[in-house]
Amino acid sequence: MNDRNSSPIERIDELGPGPASRTLAGFIFASRWLQAPLYLGLIVAQAVYVVLFFVELWHLFENAIIHGHISETEVMLSVLALIDIVMIANLLIMVIIGGYETFVSKIRVQGHHDEPDWLSHVNANLLKVKLAISIISISSIHLLKTFIEVGRMDGGKVTNSNGATIYSGEGVLWEVVIHLAFIVSALALAWIDRMSQSHPAPAKKRKRVYDSPAAAAEERSAAGRTEPGAVAKPRPERTLPAPGTDEDGYVTVRLPSGTALPEGARIVE
Image 1: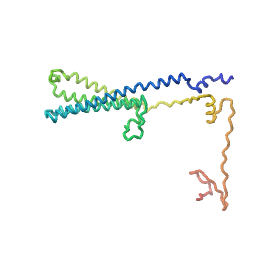
Image 2: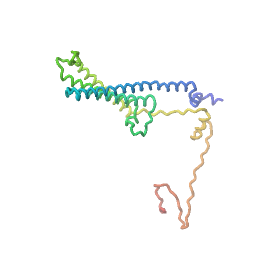
Image 3: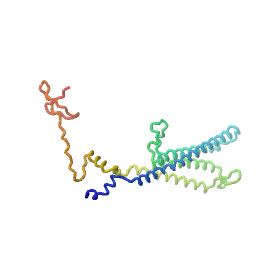
Image 4: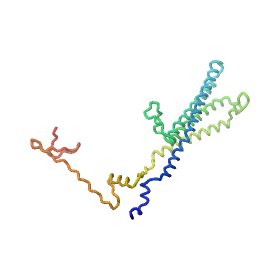
């Protein structure tokens, strides 16, 4: 009776959480599926980008082949627009697959010949770094388009056919500053990810939870541990096999592999 009252905390740990706690934990864990419709919405957005890509491709084909009045600069801008759409589509794929794998559920495609290389070791930090790199690539495409456009700047501005300002010197400066900010952010994320890998957190010793005290006592007895006050059972001693004597009067002994032979001993095939 005194032994039961002396260690109430140990009995609670062994019995584990109650039904209400397990139900609440299961409900909270199942709430991750609320993000699944968000990733489905991103798939729809990717389909819109596919349609937009072919619209831009048709405009390029129409101006270059059918009408035949398009300059090299306009072709370059159209191609950069197509590349921009592809980069955004890659970003969407990375967010959809990586985010679903990290925050919702495992995508079990191990062994599939089309499995991405980064999917096997994806985590939140790696996903952030890859997203930052993708954003820098998209920003680089936009900045390159801007530099091509400012080549025909007149009076510090680039206007369209309606006279509206498209680019200005101040706007170009802010685009460069924002692009540099993206680069600094990506370097910071990569540095944080490298620091977390070089200094891993010490693994915590997990405490096993049992359904009943009897199961805990059975596990302790199987592992060779005894309860306080209990008498440990003596273990049976291991006996080595007795050496045998052959017809020639030699004693035959089996030794483990790699053991040095004593003086006068030899190996018998």
